Image 1: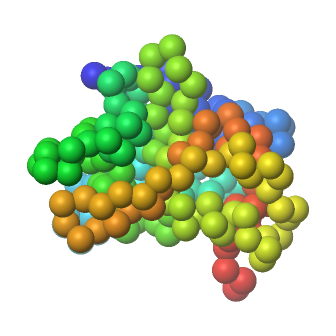
Image 2: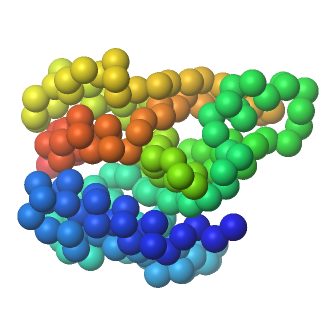
Length: 193
């Protein structure tokens, strides 16, 4: 199933408005070819500035976010949800599609963090990201105010895959993430220069 160009455009606008405090809807946009150029060049040992993942910054104002987090967007795949990971029979060799996406993102090593935004039909989008990022966002070393009502924000799960890898993931309704996490929280994650 296609990822859904309209969904990708909508998410880019939503994240642009969030990042700019509702001032601009054009800071982020779809990466041409969903980052395929960067992937192909990486296989040749080359880097490609700003074109990794499904969302890129089209304005310097958004470069901080896309350098810190690689975003992947998935639309459809209606049978994919977190239960496919949690209650999967461990002897079953084939990982669910969701698990495959998460494993691919966690092993990409293209930016410090990753986020998968998945929207099933007639459902709200959910953002999955490393629990280590969530832990930093609720830490006391932030530049901005602490997150509020974090009990409503997160649903974390941990699972082991067929390799010795343990992946800790936090899943959040995208609207809740954008409501409770401010750009100041993200800026607070950048190391001092």
